[in-house]
Image (tube, one colour):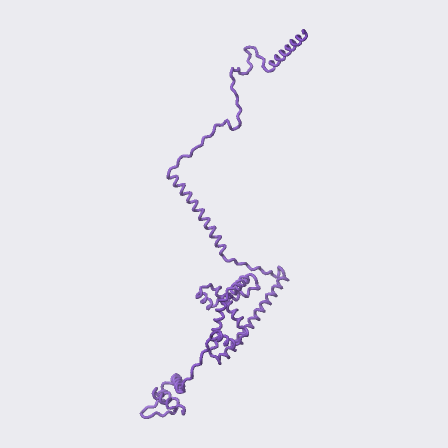
Length: 343
C-alpha cells in the first residue's frame, strides 16, 4: 500500500514538473522592471486581426451617374446618329448597285490567244493549216451558193415569161412558209441555236463564220430599219433574218420554178387571169397615138407645121406626118372606116 502511494506522489510530481516546463517554453520570461526591451507594452485587450480574401477589404464602388444632357445636346447627338446611318445606307446602296451592274453586264470571254511561231512552231503551223482549210471551205461554199442562185434566177426568168405572176406566187409561198416556221416554234429554236454559235464564235475560230455573217447582216440599212420597225435590237433582227433565210433556203433546195408555182397554188394562191385582148380599133388607135407622141418629141416644130395641110376640102394622107397632123375627130373617122389598114 505504501509503495502505491509513493508511486502516485512521484507521478504527480513528474506531472507538475512537466507543466512548469511547458509554461516556461510558451510564456516569455518577464524582464526586470525598468528594462527597455523595445517591445510595446501589452494592453489588456489586443485588437483582433481579421484576414479577408483579396478584394473584400475594398469598399463597393458606387455607380457614377452621367450628367443630364440638355435638349440641344440630345438633338445634336440624334442628328449625328442619323447622319452616320444615312452614310452607311448610301455606302451599302452603292455596293449593291455595283454588284447588280456586274451581274447584268454581258460577260465577254476573251478568245484564247493562238501560240506564235516562237512559242510552239508545230502547234502554230497546225492551227494555221486548219484556219486556211476552213477559210477555203467557206469560200468554196459561197461560190457554189452564188452559182446556184444565178442558175435559179435564170430559170425563174425563163418561167416568168410564160407565167408573168410567178414572182407573186413565189412570194406568197415564202410568206406561207415563214408563218408556219414561226407558229411551229422552230423560229425560237433556230434563233437560239444561232445566238449560241455567235457567242461561241467570239472565242472559238471554228464558229467565227456565224459571228462574221451576222455582223455583216446587221450593217445593212434594210435590217436596221426592220429592227426599228419590229422593236428588236439590230443584232436580234440580223439573227432572225439569218435564221429565217436559212430555213427558207433549205426548204427550197431542189425546187424548180414550176414546182414552186404549183405548190403556191396548193397553198391557196389564185392564179391571175390574163387581161382580155383589146378591140383591133383600140389597138390601132393606141399605136397611132404612140407614134404621134414619138414624132412630136423628135421632129421640130417647123417640120410639124409644114406637114399639116392648109385650106379647105378633104385632106390627102400621103405620109406618116399627115396622119400625125389629123385632128382627133378625123383620126377617129379614119380608124372607124378601116382605111388605116391601106396606108
